[in-house]
Amino acid sequence: MIDFSGESRYYLAGFRRVLSEFESSPLSSRYDFRAKSGATTVIRGIGHYPLICGSFCMDEQKIRVLIADDEDSLRSTIAAWLGDEGFAVEQASDGLAAIKQIQTKDFDIALLDIKMPGANGLEVLRFIRKNSPGTDTVMMTAMSDVNMAVEAMKLGAKEYLTKPIDLDQLVPQLRALMLKRDAEERIRQLQAEHTARLLYDLHNPISGLRQSIGYLMKEMAGPLSEHQRELLGYMTTSIDRVIGLLTDMMDLTKLEAGRVRLNKGISDVADLVQEVAHEFHIPLQSSNITIDIHPESDLPTIEFDRQKIHQVLENLLSNAVRTTPVKGVVVIHIRKVAMVMEEGQQPADYVMISVFNSGPGIAPDELAGMFDRYRNVTAGKDDQKTNLGLIICQRIVEAHSGRIWAESEPNKGATISFVLPVGA
Image 1 (cartoon, rainbow, N blue to C red):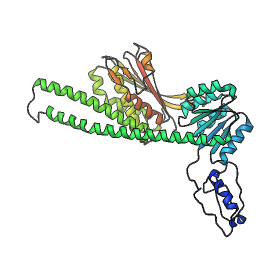
Image 2 (cartoon, helix red, strand yellow):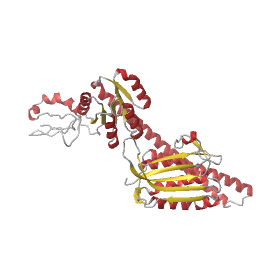
Image 3 (spheres, one colour):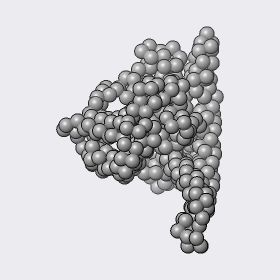
Image 4 (cartoon, rainbow, N blue to C red):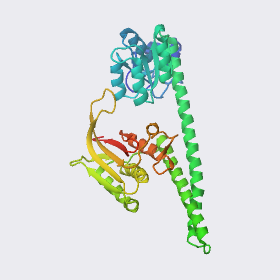
């Protein structure tokens, strides 16, 4: 007997290619072919002739597909067909059920009917784009819904299929979609690797130049005139700015490539805030800026990467000090909050850290681009600074399953807040 359930994984699509040859073989009388629809295939030889796995064996990971359609017969038919072709299939009978599935499981592809009760296909698509960007979406629609399908493509759907669905073409379409995504991911990886090498190659000689200027400033190559010292000081400031930018870009490249792992441990966020604030004692004092820290009582200790969150706080305080006028104030609040992070979820507990500065604030059109890596945000002292540091903060906080955002009104200061989950 050949039993298709259990241990070694193969796909029925590949197995079918040898069935006809095997059935005409003398061995065929020793085996009973049984296939369970949608099951992982496993081959066990019974009797005197163990079946040898040939070239049709496939060990790649199954493509995970979610099918959301309120038409039970169509949904079940597609699920059975894809299951027989080696896909790992889950089903949802309406849009809300699909959203719940996406919240708890990862999918490579979502097949969505456009018209569904609870939440239609476009609403589910928007949820996927926001919360599961690794899921490619394919819309299923009747001819009368083509305009909605076109709208879905504008929202980020990869393609749409008109009903009745051609099952013979469905499998190659889905496999082609995955091949395209894998190719795009590989291109992104190569670009990230190339960028990382380039940044590293730039960082080293510039750091060496900075060190050489330091030797000159110490007059190790001879005495300096006042004008020469002034020029070298200007060069040092410019080089430090370039080194800082390169460092930010290298950090961001690592974060976006997923090459940075979080080293989480149980710790007290309020203690970390005090520690980082103490590091800014001199610049705060020199600008006569007051800093007030207000931790809520009985704050829970939470699990996070202390070094990475230190980097976030350092960046936010640096921005706050830079944009706060002389005799201004920086206020930090730390408190426990209950938040609904995504539509359809229940409120969960978070620790929120808010950093307020009494600077000129941020214009509404710039506020929308605070976390856009391709835009500059004007600071309060008539200079511009790239916001790569804020993008890094965003990546770090999101890696902790948290969220970061900015609030401001012109001439009324600005607040940047972020939350970290309790019990993550």
